[in-house]
Length: 232
Image (cartoon, helix red, strand yellow):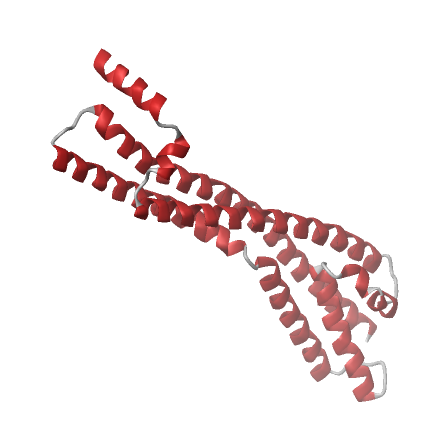
């Protein structure tokens, strides 16, 4: 037991995390590099999406407030530059553009059944397009969260294989010889977890926000078409 603790202390004193990374084999280094790049990409997406969703929430609340306050649709359409990030505003703009097209074709401010169906289709396309826009890059977080631990584990297994090959070649199997190789291999798993955990947490967070926005678009589309029916 004392020999084990002494060897562990020596290994800990001689090898820090940076040394273990720098002394790792080429394959383990490649795995670590992939995981680090994926982690940096995930954090960039998290930061960008957080700012984007914050702007979406703020502009959507402002748009809904003005829409339900009874501002004319023409005036609200003219203010579209103020709602560039709001998916509901884009849905409204798509629907109202189709309404205006119907007015021009019929030379009257009425909408028949055919043109009303065109409005609905235009709104559905806008909802789909906005959903895709909001989801952009979010699935990279899910992919990283699902695969990073296994990529790290691959690096760990590879590193341990190299350690055992070294043991076989030298015939020495004490802790001072084995521990550095195993430690550098395990760092790959640690980096994989460090990349995966924030990615999974962020993905779940953004997915919950996405569900809210999609639900709001569906509800707004229903309100928009109901108002259009009543007034025409």
